[in-house]
Amino acid sequence: MTRPSFPPSFLEGALVALATATAGSALYTGLRLLLPAAYALAIALAALGLGYLLYLLARTREPAGKVILVLIWLAATGTSLALVPDALTQAAVQLGLVWITRVWCFHRTPAAALLDLGLILAGGLAALWAIAHAGSLFLALWTLMLIQAVFGAIPARPGHAAPVGAATAPDPFDLARRAAESALSRIQPRP
Image (cartoon, rainbow, N blue to C red; front, side, top):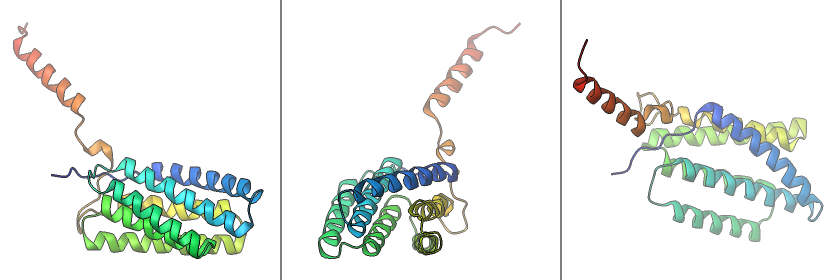
């Protein structure tokens, strides 16, 4: 039986958003020294997509499909970079792969998958708005990923609250400590 995966908290997602925006801006700036701007941005988006995929796979307890998801990422990203190496196509491919990964690893119902798709689309549109109005890759990535940080709040089942995080899972050490304290209290003489 598969143990449930606990999506990251909003605070963790916000920190991931900050790291993604910083790394993406730095990577794009470095790649611009070697490649044309459009291709540099497409490669930077692909690298960020791989980083976020690996982050999600590290957060999940889903035992099956991790290798397949990485192989799907390699095939889809390689194909899109070879056939249409522009930033908009790469962004769409990466967002689609993020959605597939989150549905596979974290969501168990069609309603949750559709809510997550809405979150992906809202984040993509907000990032487009940010890049169009501010012209800042950092701000676009920050906006996109900050909206994605909310995905942990999507309920696992309709009408049920989403798990708060790893704190809802029983800690094996805490359970052992309580059992030991209970055993000690039974064998110690009472004053």
